[in-house]
Amino acid sequence: MARAIDYGNLMHRAMRGLIQTVLEDVAENGLPGAHHFFITFDTTHPDVAIADWLRARYPEEMTIVIQHWYENLVVTDEGFSITLNFGNQPEPLVIPFDAVRTFVDPSVEFGLRFETHSDDDDDEDAAEDQEEDAPPQAAEVVSLDKFRK
Image (cartoon, rainbow, N blue to C red):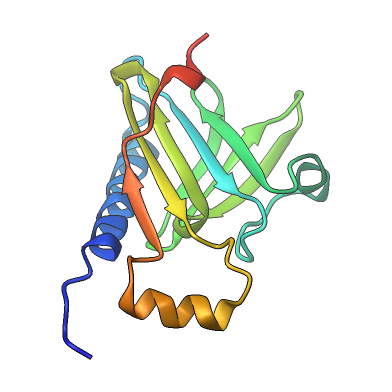
């Protein structure tokens, strides 16, 4: 097989790194100005750790808001953990970067969406196709319209 530059995966990694850098800064210095984040993630990802009642309520994906109240934001190379308030009940969450589907900062109209192609019926065929075809995941700018009030 001929060697090729895998731009899709390189972009994917770069966008995850951008989110990591932003969250590391917020963990160290807090949210600046009006910045806040809507982060949607895949609750079926094996490394996501959330309360059972949250997983039951959000069986496929969940959107969290990091804005007014959050605690214990810890960022690693693999993902982040944070404690958020759900109905006056603090809940810890662990979210790997690979589970993130969208990252939006509406205060500056910035957003990323990560596309996954996991709907293939046969994983082996999908893995073989991915070696020759388009990359399995790509990143793109997301429309902020769905987050506006």
